Length: 368
Image (cartoon, rainbow, N blue to C red; front, side, top):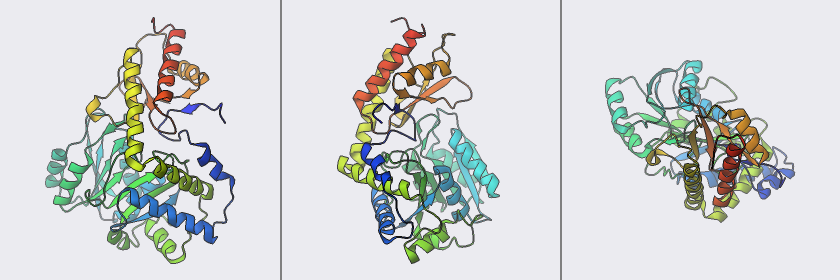
């Protein structure tokens, strides 16, 4: 495993040996010990947002998108309407979920380097009283842009509407306090900033809203209200749980707390991001976003304009030096992305920058 490349991607990401070793134990899905593991996991997750008093943590099998779809399908009534705020691919995906589920929705789209503002949301809600819910991507993974969640949340509350937050790429690293940021649902997953492995999503659902959601869901498997009610009654998952993923995340959370919790995780990622940005700038590689809206999660870089640069060749050469990068997800300009998250520190990020420099020299794109 020591020869495996470091994943500089937004998840799956590089995990610790302890986290991987936690998956060597097989668990009975109805066993009391596993039920206790699940309960402990949910309790620790709620603590990260100080949400135990106001929200339930409902885990769900599958990727983060499964949990987003479950949250929309469970919490938005069939006669509700969602305002989807978009500045990237994951906002577009959320709108597509609403369309497929048959939920009425409208979209507000800004450029991929332009955050949605609280003033935008205030104007949109004033113009359309039919809106019941607003859906926001906190950190849009397609670029790394950070949207101003606290300000937008207060506007939504003032209008008497409900907020659904896709916090897939921010939860665990960027602070969100349920006592200060009003939301009906916040959605995240195991394989991101908590440094677990992929395979499980979870939704922090406001208690009264979840209780009132019976019968909303379009799907038996994705009914969060039914999932929570069954777990509260029996301690068990309704259907076969991802036992090894749960065990790995539980172990990853132990390490998260040992490291110092959210402040320490945020600081490490911020240091990673600074090392990356500073190093790439010295190579002449420009980041897509200005620093003030760049989250320390994933950074998008403009591709070199040299015709000798081809992403596939660049990717394979960097991989051979021990680092896996991520393709760009923008439609208008050619880019590539580098993640700052996972079990990696500033020294690892500098090594990645050095590998990029070596590769660009080999490709005769850089002459330094």
